[in-house]
Image (cartoon, rainbow, N blue to C red; front, side, top):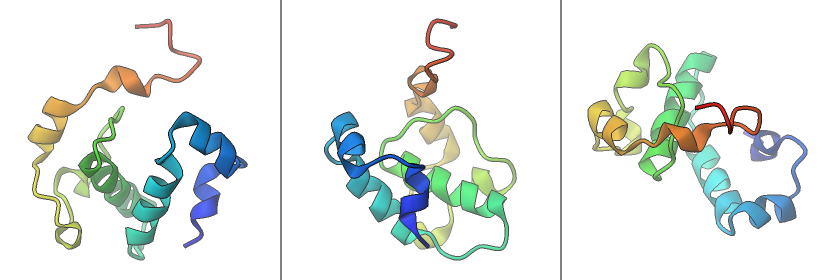
Length: 99
């Protein structure tokens, strides 16, 4: 997998200006992604890998998103992830003033 495609024309310098470790986190997480047959499985994997690193989310992936894949060694339940989630951190620039 080419992790560069996750940055969609963002330079490493720009990503590092947001957070010094953001680029390394994304590379580390994308390197852990196994091959999957469907996009929904990839979305679920990303959800669990990102939330396990303390990231927040807007919505939970449908389907297998309720159970972490065993190969990632994620030991938290979806309820625990929900308790620690701060959805307002996921607002986009077009929705920042709309709560």
